[in-house]
Length: 452
Ligand SMILES: [Zn+2]
Image 1 (spheres, helix red, strand yellow):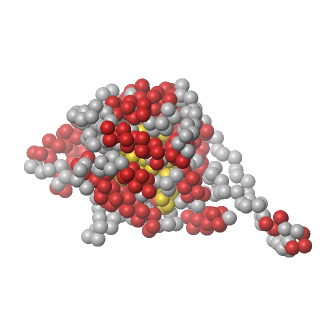
Image 2 (spheres, protein in one colour; image 1 turned 90 degrees about the vertical axis):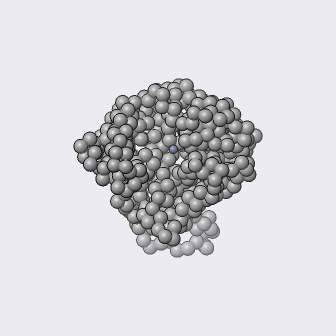
Image 3 (cartoon, rainbow, N blue to C red; image 1 turned 90 degrees about the horizontal axis):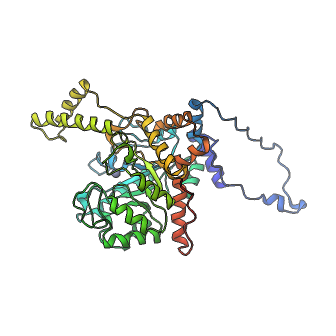
């Protein structure tokens, strides 16, 4: 009941829609009805009006898309807001941007999340490879505290989430959840006990590596192949993540690491922000068809990255040429690329040569490719918002634009149930299975929906 009252207040205060498909928990049975007639309270003089019936959903994709995004639970596997905020701190170490308000910069804020229907963006606790052996755990702690600070500063808008149950109850209260995934296992710092420690701190998935090999596993973008896949410690980490209920994220890992993880893990794994290598041959950050099939066989989910370079080989080559041209001009001016004086050089070049970008249709192509390989139960969204800069595709430039993607999918004939699965249902299923296995390790994680 409390929940319902809170939800009501939140709905009034925030203007959130009352018609989400996730219903508030049922009210407890009325104690009045259970009492003897003599002790019953007198009947209320003004009976509560019956709630207005939900209008029929629109049929045209352009209208059905925002209707659907407002009602379905949208989970995004990877949003780099903590990294973005940590780049602009004041002298006291506080963020200079407030994402509980509409922000001029960046791809995410609460207002735009509401407009796009986003409910649970995984906050990336991104620890760069350069922290390996040099303060990685402290860096993760700093970013976790930053996310906790966001929820504490705007409890009427944001809430932490450690489980699908948390996400669902936050949705019922009109709150945007801030679950956390740790991008890079470097903060484990050779201590297996740190897996359970980070679970306690609210981490729900760990991406085993970032761009370089670490003490856990090999990365897809490091030519050293230090361990030939998982390190001995990495194998223990996989077992321990299964045991404590942290999802294993295979984005960024080498192909060897991927195959060894899938073979070893007793529960489904996720790729929090990777796309299909089918469209970008040779680009090892994306997943091959064989990898997608193996991930799906185990019940896992590949969450499609929106970055233009992840979506199309020709666009990727165009962007590489573009960046090379900018770098050349900056070097000619004897500046470093991160020098603020390099920005006008880039801007002048881009005024003449606008950078090429993918489109929302490319993202739909990747989703359909996964569906064609393994069915609807194994695909999700892992935008990389706030992490891939200006490379976001036309039509998916920030978190307000998920309805554009849904419209394209509806126009291509995908039905409402399919769209709800890929928006969030699939990831919530895996997350539930991983937590259930940790609570009852003797029982299997549950049958994987059969991949085609
Ligand atoms: Zn990443």
